[in-house]
Structure formats: C-alpha cells, structure tokens
Length: 189
Image (tube, rainbow, N blue to C red):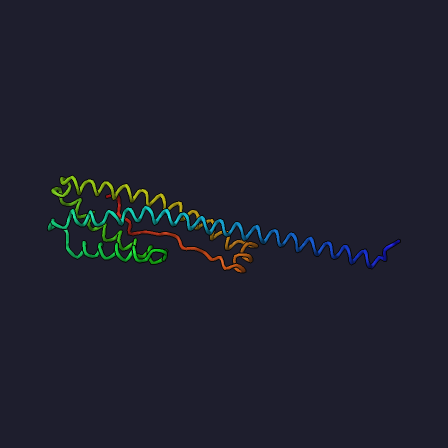
C-alpha cells in the first residue's frame, strides 16, 4: 500500500516538530539544571564567607574586652563594634544587609587597628597582640573566600545574562547576584 505524498509530508513535518520540541525540552532542562547548580554554588560560597566572618565576629567580644580598659580606645568605637556585631548576627540569611554591616565593622576595626599601631604599649600586651594576629589571619581568609564567592557570582551572572540561557533564567526566575565588595576592609592588622 502506497502512501499519498501529502501524508508523507505530514509525517515528516510531525517528526521534525517532535524533534525540535524534544531538543528544546532537553536544552531547557539542561540549562535549568546548570543554573540551579550555579545558584547553589553561589549559596555555598556565601555560606563559607559567613563561616569565616562568623569567626571574625566571635573575635570581637574578646578584642573589646581586652582593649576596653585602655584609654587609647574610644568607648564609642567599642560600643559601635559591639552593636554592629549584634546586627550582623541578626541579619543571618540577608546577604545584602550582612555585606553592608560587614563593611561598617571593617571601618570600625580599622580605627582599632590604627590605634593599636600607634601605641607601642598596646603592642606589648600579649593578649592584644594575639588578637591582632588572629584578625590578620581571618582577614586573609575572608579575602580568599570573598574572591571565591565573587568568582561563583561572576559565572552565574554571566550565564543568567547570556543568550540563549537568559530565556530559561527569566522563565524560572534566576537573577543576577551581588558581588561582595569591601573597600573598608582593614589593611593587614
């Protein structure tokens, strides 16, 4: 039995449409999964930044307790750092707010570090010196983790903006993420 020419064209068109739909579905699923993986990667890197920053936050009460007896430190600076520490801990889960507070903490810590550097009698106190070394170590860790986080953010942002993955990103609500930029980070304590 011979098929009519119109039927052959209809079957061929159906197969072509089916293949296009199948390829589009596979591409969409693949792109979606890649975006999910990248988004989770950014969240994972941010969690590591939070871990290191939490260690820094945990050092603050020790630093405040160690130096508050020295008149070189203004009470307002120590109070400000303690308040910022509390705000940072309350902001858990809000990256933007934590970034803003972390920059404020870095600015306040800079004044403590400058005071420490200008008063040799503080440098001779072992507890203060040890805390400054710990802060330097934490700052180095934060720099590394910030760099890793920003690399993940860059990769995700690039994928979210590139054509044709922008179509899937927009359809499923993937958005660009903010970089962790800190101009206020203390120079090596």
